[in-house]
Image 1: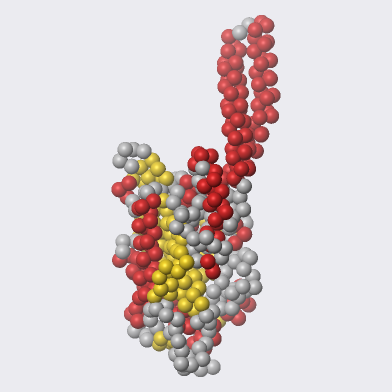
Image 2: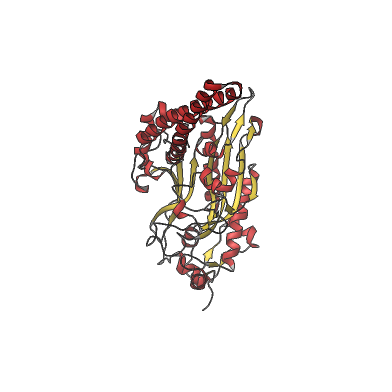
Length: 425
């Protein structure tokens, strides 16, 4: 959420941000509602003041003067009966519109309509070349005996899976490696709630625009999170942090749940789009200084790049274009990893800066040395998400006999295992 005072003073900046992000939003409608709301609120406050003033004087009055005062109070109440419902209606409409306003992207964000327009920043390694016909990750996983999708579909429906045997161990190894890396850099590890209230989803900016992609527990009015970013950033909701505490660095492990609404028919084979997956997320909370939050952005991005280099996976870092940036982000980098079966680099990590967008919604502030409070800046980035990361690991490190070489940094977490061997049928 943005500051309405900033929107009033800079409507063209907001309109340009809407255009660049390719998001439908009528700023003029918001400003019109805002103006009418302020007039109606002033009218209601004036009526309430008149009612209270005259009502207070009535016991002191006598005769005709008292009758006139009573009649005046009645007229005021009649006018309030019309104005107050209108005020409530305008407040609700204003709040809905404010939740739809996108955060204007930074000037460095390139123009573009899709991920095809993302701008490559740097690259690690080159696409893997094979001296034999390579298999895709699904063929490999089935041959290695680490995956069972048919039974998962029978139990839970489409886009579900059982990860088993060395596959389960490999996922735990990935998460432990990622957590150890982040903890060594001072990040506080957390296992977080995966069911949250609506306030947390609105506060982190996943509602209202992302509501259709979220699993809802209707009986309890609770939601399954699509990322541990939601509970991690909401952790300090309604709090005022001391400047000395900042920046805050957290890394959270959770299962994640997404309906993948609107993606049916796309990426249905294998591990790319699933209803349930696991992830280690990293977040930062800092003072609302653009220079400070930019340093935090590159810190989070650097952590993920270090992890990917350690795994030895060919990847590139891309600056996301305007249409690929979400409602709250002012800046986003993606790490796209080479996936041989897709014959392209595909997203495995997303690093986002949101400035005050989430903090305003969550009422998350910090107090400086002068005693004044300010809204924080928040940032987030994937550390590792599984099983999507299995696509490049299995495909890039496959061998001609169908075995897969385990990245060296993960072997200590797998009791020294160097390869996953195919299982005989």
